Length: 234
Image (tube, rainbow, N blue to C red):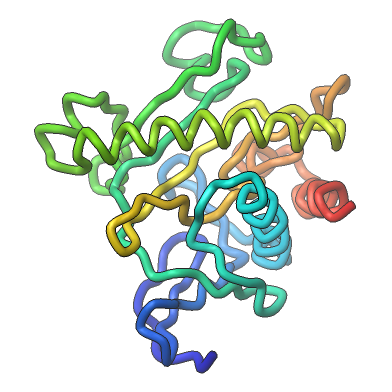
């Protein structure tokens, strides 16, 4: 697969065209942002960690019947993915209270929720990715009711599978954010799944092994990402 010109650069990744119009190369950067890019920095080798972790998780989800844009791992920082039209909705699942859930609702951090909580945010940096519901999505024409039903069903399935996956590694999946795209008329999982997009705590100790270490200046950031990679690679 031949790499062509750059078509997009985001906070954490760059996309490049290839000689096949159906595929692009996704490159993972070391840049780190938090609080809607109010805080910026660099995490050494983050791109390598996240590419490899995402590869392992995409491969696992594929084996369990979840379609995604992932095609194959190319190098330390690159994966080949299907070209998709991203649905501008960030889909969040919360299994334990953390982050904005605690700030918005006064919940105690770490409390197990009685059921997974599904949230949607408008994927728009200009408006700071505001929370939205199905009515907002409908009137803004971001997704059809049929597409949203597919997204919802896949999200709960992904949550169940990932909780099981991480539990076997002695890790708790506290919450996560995923994105979906349209590919040849179908809704499929896209973007990445990594410590950048998931809150992952060590079971029993509650040690944070995700981007919260960068958000809150907790130190040992690279070591935390490396620890997640070590476990998912087993």
